Image (cartoon, rainbow, N blue to C red; front, side, top):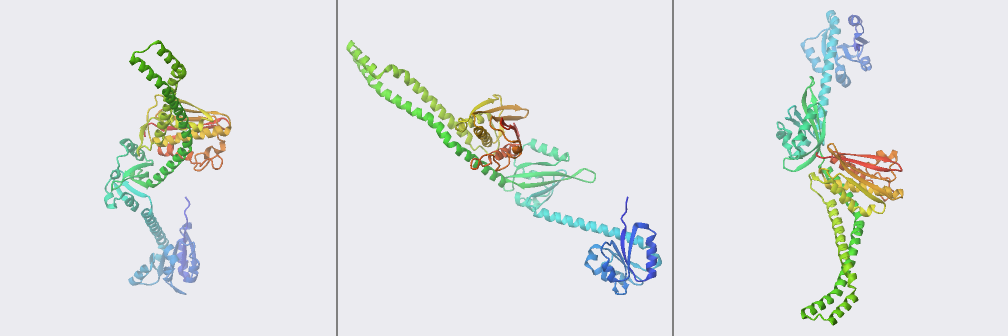
Length: 523
């Protein structure tokens, strides 16, 4: 091990004393490095790179006490004062002035000076470390007091020992109310026992847990927070405390929801004209068929009245029968009897189409509840395919392979509908850009504890250098004015951040793209 020499500045004008002091330090080899001057002026010129000053009290150009008054020396270098005489008052005066130690000159004192210097140096370093630690703790305390995030420290059993002002501001609980309590005081009941079990398993194993809570303030209102909880180990490597840094993200979540809703409404607005067209077609032949049935009935009704008249009068003679046959031929009863049922059947089919479109639109646009609910994803996919028909029918055919035994998934259905809409729209646009009519394939299946949704297309694919960018906000490969670059970014946020699933991409330029979405069946 290499020891660093203690650099000592010796300020002494007596040559004999210098010789004795120097000889006592030489015995210790390289442990000490002496720099010798004989006046105060030279002492000030040599204080840089000095660990310790040993100075005579009386020097040719002044009193050695002036060294103790210098700000640089006071804050950075311990000073040992030597004098040939001095009583208790002198000692007290020097110590008050800031001297690290006092030495009464003698041969014995000179011999012990290296030991004294070493002890003073060690003590000074210890004090400096303590001051540094105190300063760091003070800075940390100030930082925690002014931190915008709530900070909570508990013992190893979860009893709260410290909270900062932001914790008080966010939760409504004062420091006095929080300390001695447990974090359960914030429990909203929105997280189940499994959630907390996994949290404790993570932090008790020495790892940091990161996640989100829906917590409850003192006034009973709920808020969403992003939290990181880390264990703090003692010298024995055992968990002594837990530190939680908690950020209220309720406002951010609200803004994200507003952005998603705006993007969803933008998508719905784009679909509105197409949906109107899809409804207008069956409504048109509903109108035509209804008019046909009305006109036909107006032709048949007089004939029915005549039949009833003859029947009630009991006058079905040959002449009346001939008259009825003539009337039947005039209205072409054979044609009407064949076409009216067809018109009615066609009208019923049109009503069914309209009902399906309206139901699909209602299912797609339903705002849902704040909490995640169990939902049928196959039904969601079918509804979205229906309302997007006018988007893809001119460019693509949609093929589905939906697992009939697919379990319901706990999710925010409105958000999942938005993701499927974005994917189908992107697939249709990609096929349209390629030019040829293509295929959009949508399939669902169960993979372990996850539902897998594959949405593929036979479009132009995505270049390799752009794959890493497609989920970035505002990034788009479409022409200016044809895309906001928000669809895939919002889809990623919904699947990964909001539902703790995954979204991957399998693409080949010129061949097509498949998005693989995985959602946990349960949280």
